[in-house]
Image (cartoon, rainbow, N blue to C red):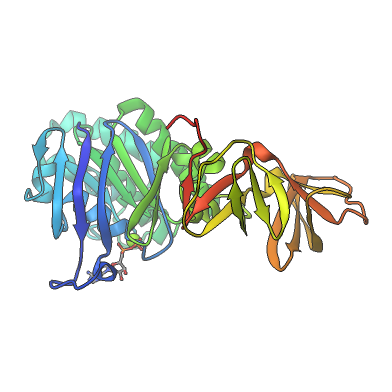
Length: 360
Ligand code: ADP
Ligand code: MG
């Protein structure tokens, strides 16, 4: 196993790119630690599969290098990289049985038949296909085929990394949860580096130790679920993580407070001069309704969702959400909104600006 380093990596599918817009991946430098469980999260088309295929060697980057440990593998074919990859659309050999499908990567490497049998049984149990082992893959349901594909990705113990590209798309939600749990236990047991691509934040947050958020061809943040929640590095992370996402307000930043539409909003920390388009961001969980202080808030509607209520409304024309615990009474004369100062983040041109004295 090995640490994966991306050095000045960029990719354009256009052989003669003219501007940054022609790059599916903008230049990036990142280290993926050996043995990490990563989720690669972002909207459709942001470059997740492109990045994964560059790591596995299916795609050669137009710029930069890929290193496994100290070895430069940029020009090495997939087979030489010792990586397992599971695709969004299952790749299954229809004429083979489930057992033969799962055994395929091991047979290819001429592993001992006794080991192969034991390992295939173990994987079949993890993906819930023990009863189907001797059936031909042809005729199985789409979700069974996806499980076979997933199992084949998990069967080798000797890989550098396992890459999953939205591997549970056609699987029903309950089974999804089961399989994700299995992947996590596989990770704990064998410690492979795993990169799990998804556009679903719940999947990402439950699978990964570190979530890598991509937006428009860039990795905008690599962090723990808590870091993404507390200190989104980019406004996209604020919007994309959380439901509903972070609230943003155009603001002027003046030391230890922000000025929003002429109203002074205290911040939890002091900022130096902040250039560019400045906004403050505050999650719905850290806003409260009030009768007197803060900014004027107009309630539009209230939604009850499980253990909390979402109050949807407006602050001077900007859509704003507040989350409160279920059963919270909402007073008719509560027409203002207050923010927990230490939970406010400051953004300049969409990137978070650290306050003075914050440890990096
Ligand atoms: P994701 O997996 O996040 O949905 P992709 O990596 O598939 O995103 O795509 C990133 C961008 O690259 C998209 O704009 C997509 O249209 C483009 N793209 C992907 N594959 C190709 C290709 N083979 N040729 C040209 N453009 C491509
Ligand atoms: Mg994709």
